Structures are given as structure tokens and as C-alpha cells.
Picture (cartoon, rainbow, N blue to C red):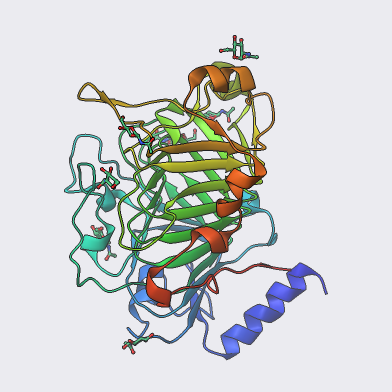
Length: 368
Ligand SMILES: *[C@@H]1O[C@H](CO)[C@@H](O)[C@H](O)[C@H]1NC(C)=O
Ligand SMILES: *[C@@H]1O[C@H](CO)[C@@H](O)[C@H](O)[C@H]1NC(C)=O
Ligand SMILES: *[C@@H]1O[C@H](CO)[C@@H](O)[C@H](O)[C@H]1NC(C)=O
Ligand SMILES: *[C@@H]1O[C@H](CO)[C@@H](O)[C@H](O)[C@H]1NC(C)=O
Ligand SMILES: *[C@@H]1O[C@H](CO)[C@@H](O)[C@H](O)[C@H]1NC(C)=O
Ligand SMILES: *[C@@H]1O[C@H](CO)[C@@H](O)[C@H](O)[C@H]1NC(C)=O
Ligand SMILES: *[C@@H]1O[C@H](CO)[C@@H](O)[C@H](O)[C@H]1NC(C)=O
């Protein structure tokens, strides 16, 4: 059976079982014309829910707070090529002049149990999320959907495409497009990305949580800050918060950008000193700066210290300059033994006291 037929039969199967259908245009099977309309119709319980979004542009901010599993499917003719996605969730907002109470308010999609749990806040430890805040979505899945924040075609302040906190979620064959702070994984956020496209310019993976980016394309639309800017925080349990970019490709977004940014883009900079970032088995084009990572001077103090883990494991390509890495002194080139504790999603997505303690929410063979 071809993958297309598989989607078609999956479509009919789920529709029969009560899949909710969203269409921006009038359509006989459509239950809602907006994604938020479909989300708001879901019961606030632990039941599993599937929403199919038909081809189109949806200009809306979407917030998901419910605890039960939610799957968002985007209609597509090519299940395994994110560049061919036909469903776009679009918003245009940037927190460039502190014109919003928090960066969170700019995000196209937010998955978080409460607004407080999704706030970035400020300072070393960020917004102080109340202790009695529940965990949010236990199993969020999104397939073949693009999230765009189109505020400007350059870094104009935080312009989030996704804000994901206190939840577990997987993104398969999805696209994330903005210029700054594109992907925010907040506190106790566990996010897995697979065969997705993430495009940005400045600090475009940032957060406090744990993100694993598998077999994806990271597109540089310019250079600014770092590709990543993580802020670790001390938890009472052994969560290996951080950003893990694995078996992926980091390249200039197109040929004209490529000529402008040779040797200029940093893999990351430490948003705070507990940053943990690893690029593993990842191709790096000539856009990457020779030192790999860079430091961050804040009020006269460099944030990089001996709590920071900036690493590469078997990184390759013209952007991987071993001499430059060693001279820079920030980048740990990991051996097999050093990489081993971070070498699978199950090793890094640790969660409190077995409460959510496994990776069953990851789809290990999407569309296969
Ligand atoms: C959802 O399940 C959890 C246990 O996993 C339970 O504590 C909670 O009360 C349930 N929520 C609802 C709304 O049923
Ligand atoms: C989603 O949350 C943001 C704040 O993060 C708020 O500004 C926006 O109005 C919310 N949108 C919906 C549809 O609830
Ligand atoms: C960004 O560029 C696209 C493609 O050239 C254009 O359609 C869009 O209007 C631009 N957006 C802004 C905010 O200037
Ligand atoms: C290349 O990417 C840059 C950054 O996103 C964009 O401004 C420019 O329009 C793109 N050029 C082409 C030819 O697509
Ligand atoms: C976390 O703990 C380490 C080690 O105890 C300490 O040095 C560091 O300042 C703490 N960081 C934060 C952000 O609280
Ligand atoms: C970390 O650095 C501080 C001083 O900057 C030093 O006192 C401490 O011993 C170092 N810790 C480790 C584990 O190297
Ligand atoms: C690699 O880094 C070294 C040390 O900074 C530098 O001299 C050299 O030009 C770099 N090579 C390339 C190809 O950028």
C-alpha cells in the first residue's frame, strides 16, 4: 500500500471514529473553520483526540491546555516531505520593544497547561511558575503542519512559532518558520522533532526544557546570537534539560544567504550557565563560525562556566573546524563514552518520579 493510500484510509478510519475536521474553506466534512474552534470543542479530560486540518492558511493563534492526548494531522500529498506541507498556521507578532507582557504572547501555537507555565520571564531562572501548576498535555503529536510567525523577514525581537511547556510532544514532518526565538521549549517541556524543518536567524531554539531534534533540516536565514540559546535550571530530579540536535543538517536557507554568512553563525550561546547543547552526527555547512559556540557577556560577566555543556559528537562538513573549536575553548568534542549518557531520547527525557516517566509519547515510526 502506498503512503498516500495509507493516509487516505487513515483519514476515513479516523473520520468514522470521530476525527474532527477543520477547513478554512467550505467543505462537506468540515466541523470547524478554525483550529482553535476545534481545540475548544474537546473535553478537558484524558481522552485521546484527533484533529485533521485540511489544506489552507489559518491565520490564528492556537492554545492547547488540555491534559489528554491530542494529534493534529495536516492534509498533504507527501507525508514524508515537510517542504511540501500544505497546512500553514500563521501569526505575525514580535516582542521587540517589550510591547507584550512576555515573549509567549507572540507564539503561533502554544501547548501548556496554563498561561503562567508558558511564560519566559526574565533573569537567570525565568518566570517563577507556581508549584501547584499541573503537568499539561501528556501526549501531543503534530504531523505535516507548518507553524509560521511572519512578523518580519529579519530578527525583530522574539517571534515564536511554537511555545511548548510542561508537556510531552512530538512533531513529525513539520515546519517552523520565523527569524528569532522560533522554537521555545519551556519549563518541563519535552519535545521531539523528526524530519522537520526549522528556519531562523537568532537564538531560534531556546528554552528551559528538553528538545531532541532528529533527522531534521536547520535553515539559517542569517546569523544572530546562536542557533541555540538554552537556559538550564536546577530541578529536584535528574532531568537532562537541554537541546540535542542529532543526524541533522545545518545549512544556509538558500544560495544568496549562503554567500553572506560564511563563517559567521554560532551553534549556540549560553542563555544561562546551565545551558546544555549537543550537535551529534550533524552536517554543518560553511556558515558555521570556526569556534562552533560563542560566549555571552552579561553585565561584564561571561555566562559560560564549568556548568555549561557545549558539545559536538561526530559533527562533520565544511563548518566543522577542529582547530578552530580547540582554539575557541568552549566546545567539547565528545568521545563515544562522553556522548553515551545523552545518546538516546530515553536517556534525556527523564521526568519526575515515574509520573510521566517514559517516552511512549514518541512516535518511533511515523508514516512507516
Ligand atoms: C487524568 O488522569 C490522571 C492520572 O493520570 C488523573 O489524576 C486525572 O484526574 C485525570 N483527569 C481527568 C480530567 O480525568
Ligand atoms: C493564546 O494565549 C495568548 C497568550 O499566550 C493570548 O494572547 C491569546 O489570546 C490566546 N489565544 C487563544 C485563542 O486563546
Ligand atoms: C517577507 O517576504 C515575503 C516573500 O518575499 C513577502 O511576501 C512578505 O510580504 C514579507 N514580509 C514582510 C513582513 O515584509
Ligand atoms: C533567501 O533567504 C533569505 C532569508 O530568509 C530571504 O530574505 C531571501 O528572500 C531568500 N532568497 C531567495 C532567492 O529565496
Ligand atoms: C544550580 O546549581 C549549581 C550547582 O549547585 C549552582 O552553581 C548554580 O548557580 C545553580 N543555578 C541556578 C540557575 O540556580
Ligand atoms: C568551577 O569553577 C569554579 C571557579 O570558576 C571552581 O571554583 C570550581 O572548582 C570549578 N568546578 C569544577 C567541578 O571544575
Ligand atoms: C579553522 O580555524 C582556524 C583557527 O581559528 C583558522 O585559522 C582557519 O582559517 C579555519 N579554517 C577555515 C577553513 O575556516
